[in-house]
Amino acid sequence: MPSQILTDLNLKRAQVGEVAPVEADNLRIAMLSIHSSPIGELGTKDTGGMSVYVREIARELGNRGHLVDIYTRLNDARQNQMAELYENVRLIHLRSGNNGHMNKLALYAHLDDFLKELEGFRTRESIDYDLIHSHYWLSGRVGNWAQERWEVPHVFMFHTVGAVKNNTVGSEREPELRTAIENHLARNCDRILVATDKERVHLMQHYGAAAETIGVVPCGVNLDLFRPLDKKKARQQLGFGQDESIVLFVGRFAPLKGIDRLLEAVAHLQHYRRFRLVIVGGDGDHTPESKSLRSLSRELGIQDFVTFVGRIEQEKLPPYYSAADVSVVPSHYESFGLVALESLASGTPVVATKVGAMESILREGETGLVVENCSPRLLANGIETFISRSHFPSADAIRATVLEFSWASVASAMMNEYAAVLRQYNFETCCCGKVSMI
Image (cartoon, rainbow, N blue to C red; front, side, top):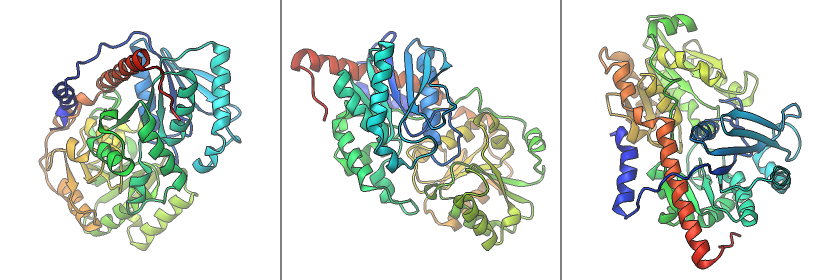
């Protein structure tokens, strides 16, 4: 049952003799998200669920009185170096390489510049952090370097695992440098956080990470933003027909997301005369990814059934979820699948491939369906299940299955992880001296 995931985490801690730690007061947290800004344009090449995760977790921690500084790369000279995002949360832009977008592999060569900028800012501000929380392998590398200097715990979150992506059909090949750095991080961080037990197993299998160093904290959803809206009004607002069968995809235009096989699935649904696939995301009509998907829709003869609406700001997404009969997550790989939570919180069922947390958060045949085989034909069958039947649980009933995934609940689980690693780190420091991180 999806509502039991957070409860199960607490039960696991109790079974291994862990006592739920008391939440520390007024922690100073350095959060690193170097290649992707938490206020970047969602749906573009390097800005997706991770940016939402960083932003929402930081907001919740700030609400609890913790002081969070999020460090990201300056990619536009017009950006202010520092901005107050939320109460107790600052976003700090640091120079690293040239202005503008940089390939992640090219950015690696400039991480030492980022570290120097980070140290300069920290020194000028006279800040001592209690903990480092880095996101993605580039940030993790800087996090390890900073941990050596600051002698505080380093918590790291992969978000996606390079070795898994390289074993996944449809994914672009990840460079050897990334997998080497990830292998190092898996063995040398004070705490690794993953969003699912599946990802935990991946890290142990591919990188030899020790089970006791890995904590499972699921993703969350903004329940105030994503809630059921009147379907008729939502469709009217967006210009969709009231009698259409509407299928929704939200996400980046990356091979990993499986949009090509979703288009192939739609080719099996052309017998529905009033059918529309709505695709939200992308960097614009003229990018290679967008051109390729539009070309494929023409090759399949489904261009009249597909609407590319482009990138939509997150706060404008709710009407799209409510207008849809079903959302689809056709990905080859997801570390969790944040879009599915947003859809369910909006009262819309989800058809998904067997990725991330889909098997845990979807109730088969009620709030969604996990496709056993990733073939377009079976994906089409799953979609047809939800556009052909007349009776399903109400939008409110679907939403009720994900109420425990509020960001407040996720932040509580995160604080338990922080407190545990701080307690362990302080114990090792007191009894054994500082542990060097290479």
